[in-house]
Image (cartoon, rainbow, N blue to C red; front, top):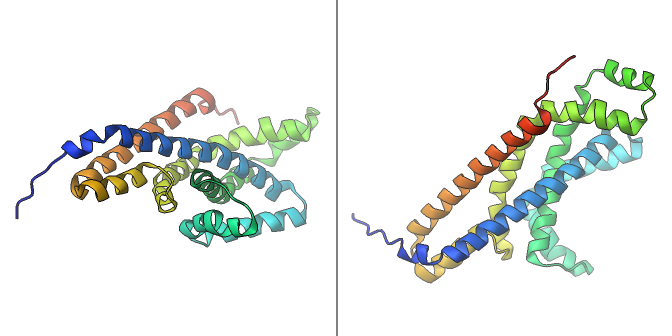
Length: 223
């Protein structure tokens, strides 16, 4: 069987593919940023908060980690509008990704926090540091350093999982590819190019994460 490759329709649609790639990058970056904030707050609440708050956080984590991301996406885009919460497909996709990442990253951050020796916290108290200063300087930064590989791996997985948001017509890279396929019927060529773009995005994000580590977390361990 012979197949005639025709990449011309794909190359002609580069502006659309670049726009979809840019939206994928936006969704991924913003969800990583806000998801990490959610994870840090939840990890702090789970390790230091009152019992009722810990129960709520545990319920949130179990709910998200034991349900499919696609169902969560449908909930934010299709179910919530029935309760009067209406937003665009892009916003629904971003919220779903933040909520999903927040649950998974919470356990990663919590493990890092609990790995900090109690002696360091007691030293912070002896230096008359506030609880906020102890959490920020004594606990959080060393914890992030310890869990950085696991956390960045979760970020990469989230970026790849962002392709699912195409099912609610968010104009990400996968959605653009599906539209092009229906117009040109060059499925093989389109998805070869899209696969290469996702691979390139993964390599770029991995490189940027290494730069962040070298810039902010690569310091001597004096413990």
